[in-house]
Image (spheres, rainbow, N blue to C red):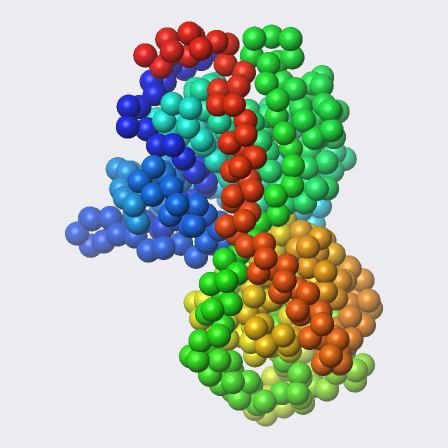
Length: 493
């Protein structure tokens, strides 16, 4: 049954819906809300979009603290609309269904997904709450852009509440093939949720193809190429397009940051602090089992063992940002990585020198830019990744046209970053060969590869990504599939 929702007179032309707000909100000692900007990639990607929308833009999301009820507030000219989550919601919807069911399922079942009906119930309940918050804020005929796997049911809920809207959805992580997706007990409901959108975007063409194949198998809807027809032959007929829109970074800003004297000086300091090694390798990841950290460290340890790299003049710096520390699989991963790092340093380290510098912490962008500049070889060896923006940050930082990028072929970035040394991270022997090749790459070849990489990263930045997606969405007639204008008017009134 349709829930009646009045269109607000002061609605917003663009509403972004994401699991998190672009700020983390908490209460100070006096009980007043305070906020700090979130460090996530999605926030960075959408900041220019929201800035362009100005006071016509709103962002719906969770503030980051459970059991915190907050009124909407304005930051940098945009309205932020907090969605409250209880501690139970966080445990079941976020840590449970999103991160212990969907995340491993969508990443090739690298870890076994857990299927619990209580988690699914929470996922539905929270997704409806997000949809209702967006429905209350969007202007008539406005655009709502929903983001990522935590909110796959929002498009359909939102269309039920506000059929006058243009609805876009962007999937930031991989979308699995049918044979894996079919394991999900609620697979049809998720597909129907996504088909509430007018445009469903993915990182890679292969992900979009996987989605269309899933639709073809699990529904009786007509598909033609990338287009799915919903409600065929009825007044509510409409078309849903699935397509690839590879995300990027604010590459010009990162390039400028890496050129500053402070960052340049810090890069030299880092090498000096590490003993001025002949070869500095770098890995930067969230501590997540999809990132291939264990495989990378194992390959490096074997190179030292084999003597193909010298333990005295080679250093691997591995930054592993804390992630989902309440999820058991992540706790186990940390223990395994730290045990492996300790073993390598114990076997190959000397007084005053450790061949692996392991940093389980996050750093500001200035320090990250300096690390990128200091590194001779960047290792991005994810087992599966929707895009991987770290690879693009490394390229954007290398205005000196030096350095080499070793990149997993199972990242979305591999489709774009021609010039990287591609690897299969499951093939330890092949990864060892690739690392050795990158370490000893001729300067002329290194410059040629890096220039090619930089042309792509600087030429296709996050602004181009968002403009491309929104242009495709804007081409869709507002309210396609609504029964008729008169009925919309009655609902709006």
